[in-house]
Length: 173
Image 1 (spheres, rainbow, N blue to C red):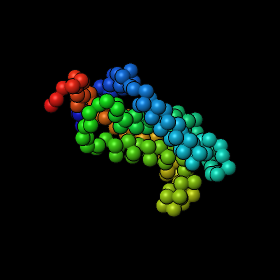
Image 2: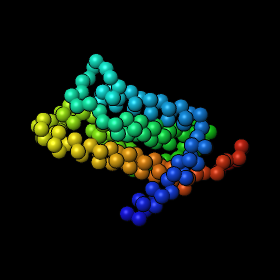
Image 3: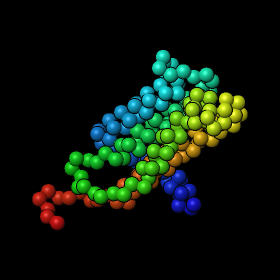
Image 4: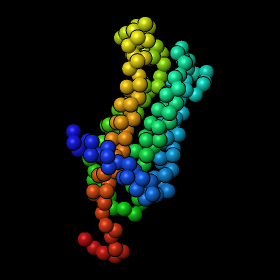
């Protein structure tokens, strides 16, 4: 638990440092993934009005910032997987990726219509979804943001700890 809390305390500085050191490829990937996440989640949860999906319960005010923040964090997290073309290949294990995927998935449950969610509707019924699932959605939103933040912070921690010095041209190992 202490290492998790330490990760959250150190993460703002590591995120700022990573943004400053980001390559153009990483910035493009971050932007594209954030945009795709905004469109997919926004259309499916009708935060972006559309004719493909409907929503019986209107969105609440907190849905929009959560939706945008999770898209930004997902984009930044995706950018950590983009390697510099000139960097040597490094074998990595990715335990943090599952936390990011879980956080992105929770976003859909958090900002979606509580009675349009087929899982909640089947498990709880219409009135149960309103009485039990709807009040749980802000908790899911916080959990989604924390999971994405944690995954991003851990990826950046690992990148800083495992950073390799640049190899001189013509050097052999």
